[in-house]
Amino acid sequence: MHNKRFILIFALCSLLFAPISAQRAMNRPYVDDQLFHFGFQLGVNFSTFHVADSELELAPDPLHPDQKEVFHARVSSLLPGFHVGFISDLRLCKFLNLRFCPGMMFTSRTISYKTESGRPVPDKGAHIDVLAMPVYLPLYLKWSAEREGNYRPYVIAGGGASFNVSRDREKPILLNLMDYFCEVGFGVDLYFRWFKFCPEITYRIGFANQLAPAQGRMELPPYASFYTGAIPRLTSHSARLSFNFEYCGNICFS
Image 1 (cartoon, one colour):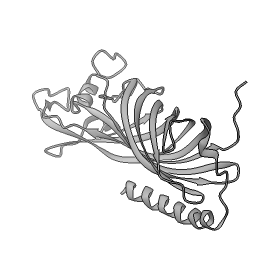
Image 2: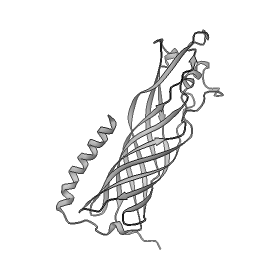
Image 3: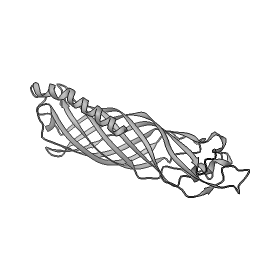
Image 4: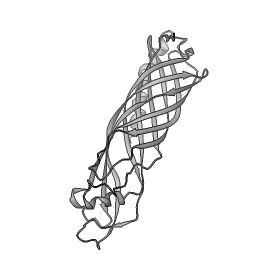
């Protein structure tokens, strides 16, 4: 559903600017010959977790440890987040560029728990909000098609590492500090007089288990361990709609 929304917004942006670029003369016809250029990125994202199922039988009530059930965890809701970043671009050849785009994401997800029998989860813990602010350091390869007027589509792929700078240790679900990810997507360069405007859609998949164990965390109540016990593995996925603004002036190094 969210990916369809991204594609629709991207198509509308392309339809809005493509006729303008086709009717006018080429803006900055030699800008793609620059060795380096820079820019910044703003965007929205929808992030979720891939939750691995656990077959462990856990006791939801610490007063009755013999009454065990199988718990299931799911991401029940997610809110749109946003991200900001910096773009540095190195031209490798006519159609290929190397890009380093560090930035920060702001995300919010809700994990819901239920039992197979339908019994309520104790202490109002059926829903847990998980907030995260990862700083990411990705490296991409950008392959561009031939430029047509002021319009040039491209595909992008790469990967990197991220570091979560917001961790609430008082919640049962604590995310690990570090993650590794790969990312693929596509976009279009729209050439204006002084800059390039580049709407871009990407999908990011994390590889590292994001769930920190509850054992040894003295700030948690005794029953909190079953929240993490119901999730053997938690990986992060996100769909991102970005708006890149890239400077088209001359850069001098002296």
